[in-house]
Amino acid sequence: MKVLLTGATGLIGKEVGKALVRKGHHVIALSRNAGKAKLELPFPAEIIEGNLSKGAIDSPALNEVEAVIHLAGENVGEGRWTEERKRKILSSREEFSEHLIQSLPATVKILISASAIGYYGDRGDETLTEKSLKGTGFLADVCEKWENAILDGKHKISKARFVILRTAVVLSPFGGALMKMLPPFQMGVGGVLSSGNQWMSWIHLHDLVNLYIKALEDSSMEGIYNATSPEPVTNAQWTEELCKALQVRKGPPVPKLALQTLFGEMAQAVLSSVRVTSERLSTFHFQFPTLESAFADCCRYYQGGDQIFFAEQYFDLPRSKVFPFFAKAENLEAITPPLLQFHVEKSSTSQIEKGTLIDYSLKVHGLPMRWRTLIEVWQPEKFFVDTQLKGPYQKWQHSHQFEDLGSGTLMRDIVRYRLPIGRLGQIFGGSFVRGDVSKIFSYRRQAVPELLRKGN
Image (cartoon, rainbow, N blue to C red; front, side):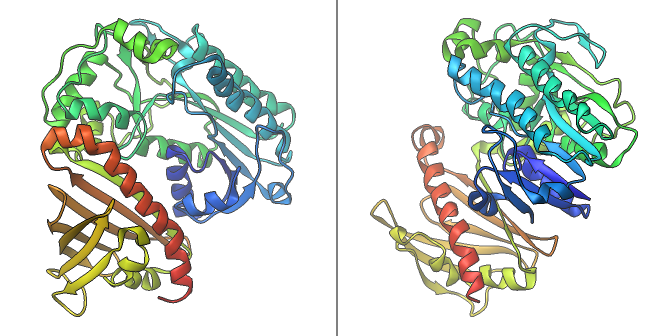
């Protein structure tokens, strides 16, 4: 099936896109910048360049679309809610959706759109289902207008099946809301918010993606669903489970006034009590039905104060071509920014294998450094792990994973690191180091495809 995907470069969009390709669907991604999307998308896709903020999209490729998964929207949790910010949040949902509907052919069979449980507002201890009425507040109004803009599309796409997923807080080990919560908890100062009695509803990213695929392929699904796990918890329970998963102590409570000072009007969303369940997903199988299981999966990388850098890149080449490139230590020089003056000094074996020792030299902000790494795991064309034995970090472990995806290869990098001098190192150097690592991977993202094309 040819599926149009909006918001394809976002946290959820990337995972939905990969899942669609794995299921054999052809993905058409709508992006404001086709060149950037081509580099960022971790799956093969036909890319249409267009900006829904400016109006309908005119592209012949849209005439072949059979289904739509609509995920585009301004991130609600980024920055304070100024009047301008609130305008962008609303327009990126209401106007984008209206312009999307105008862009689609009347022959589309399925339209699936995101929404949010913010629709229900702040409701205390009330248990909320799909039958519950709309709440009050900015987010509730946004969700109502967002959903209405989609449902109004039935006038144009009259034969399509419409599904709206009101999504709870999404948990992922590599992005989203949880990543913003982790730093204070890792440093031992994370505590309950205000009274801790407010209810929080959530869903693991893996389950949410499966739900989108089910909505696409299950013709019995139609209408509005609460995309949330079957176990909402209070903020106090959330805090206890998160501390348990990270193996850290709970910090002092965070006063309501402090949250209001920090977030302004957005504190309403942070402190809202939303106890949402789904009557309509009673037969859906959740892989992570409890918060304990979800946190166990998401937090396993972060125990002991570890930090994570995660990156993915898709190559339109088979693993037999991609893996050998990364298996050559000397190629690391070509894919590292010249400013670092990265150089492989020596390798203990002529070919990389398990147990190989590799010595490097480089400069970080002009400071010369030496690095020795051990190839700890070596599974040709599938997986390898290198671990720092000597170098600037207290810990550095880099896993490289290779997966067949479509006609090409998805490469996944997971760097698990820990800075020297413990918490002080993280406080004063955490964002600094992450910025440096991000720049290195950004350089690689552009350099590697060109080198692979040249046959390096």
